[in-house]
Length: 192
Image 1: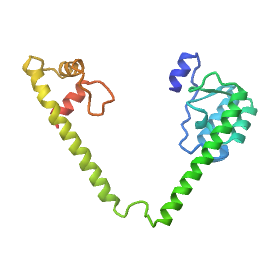
Image 2 (image 1 turned 135 degrees about the vertical axis):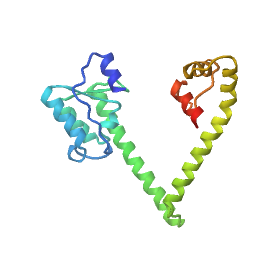
Image 3 (image 1 turned 180 degrees about the vertical axis):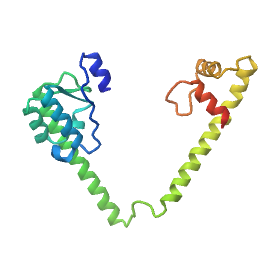
Image 4 (image 1 turned 120 degrees about the vertical axis):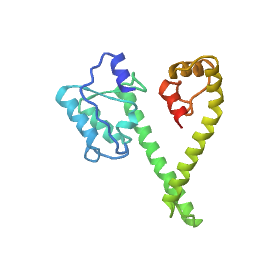
């Protein structure tokens, strides 16, 4: 999303910094990639582009300090935000962080009161069961698609891409339901 936003708006990406630490952290010291991005922006007078404001921080004071440092901020989800609106949304993001923390804490207290154990003592078993479930789902999907593939082959279409095109034209979704059929997906289906 950030790359597309940059391309659409004539920005050149100087460097990508992907932060994996929570936006709830209160300072740059706790978030090394954000600190790196801010340092780059200061040094090169670059604009910091983020998918959403809460990815930068859920702490209003921290966002205010970033804004006061002179670094321009662009938010992909809300590209027309001005300094005033960023300040208001920073307070909203901070409030949401506080509410999330309270909900989690309350839920954990309820679990303790009801003597509910969280987690599992048999993670290996759970992983094995998940893998078996995924394998069974894959087999079930394959068994539902193979008759259609055989029908396509009986009509004279034998190439992997040809079969993929036919499946797409028939509106048959892939197993993940996220995309269109490609030759490699047909090959994988036939090899299973």
